[in-house]
Length: 416
Ligand SMILES: [Zn+2]
Image (cartoon, rainbow, N blue to C red; front, side, top):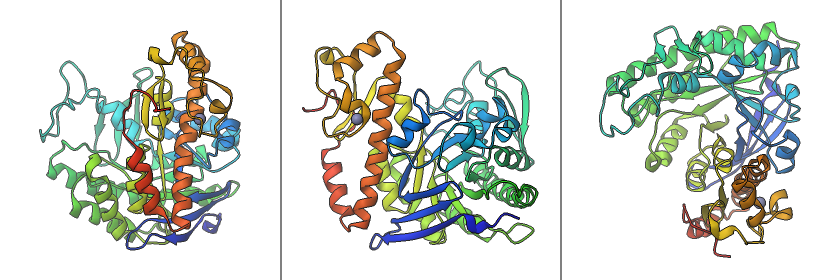
């Protein structure tokens, strides 16, 4: 059996009176200094950018999606290609999510099929008119239709573990059920118990596959905390997952904080979870990258987080600078021959002007996406690097105050 010691976490400097800390996650493919932002390469590529460039811009690890890679090209092909890192020529640690989020969000149509505008409505079956629910959850797993060709598939905890072992990422996540804030309290309780039972099955299957695949480096498994906006459910989820043991006695190597939550209570929810979770294991926050969320998550105890946003919005001409996010597509940049941000050290800012990027977007050139993604990913990676340095240097609160003092969210253009 591969030694779990190939994966470890060491706490560095703690933030006084809070759960936030710096640290180092060690994986068979290298170390990750935390807190760290993990850029998303959904289909084993950060869209429009070379893996080599992601390394150059400071990305320490990448996260890919099990659901997408299961449908295309298939996990057996990634396995034959030497696992996710080797297959995509990424020389560093990788993460895969369990596929649960995509199965349920694309399948059920969360935000697309589900009528999300029905704020305040508590219903387990709020579906937009004329749409069909594409995923069905039962106690054993989820049956869903592919968003690519409509073909029918089924994920269970064992299937998700099988896929993730074949994909071969250093960090994997247990298969969980995604709920929305609109589900009733009763449904959330039911779902949480289902996720707990699935977590047990994931641990058991993970042990079995680890023993069967000794030719591969050890893959760590993180349990996923659900419980939506309910304090008692979040705390219970943490306690339950911490207590789980596989047949051979193994435990989760870390934890993912997932599920539905509103921006304003992000810090509170991460704080509840980190009150309960063991100090010596890493905590990953799924799906955040906005600077205000990053500060709050780190302060309350998140070590790593991922998000598609920096690259997704880059493809729509939205650019991050320290003052906020603006759109390079607007005509004011047509003759602006300055860099996006002259304090940024990214390849794009060193070599290209706002006018050129504006032109590329207007002309619908592919290079627009590449250059803007490089900048946005560098912006986010660098922000989190600075947060880590501020924790180690003992000036986190000053740095947070300075940065957030200048951050305005959506802006029309940077001041300079
Ligand atoms: Zn830049």
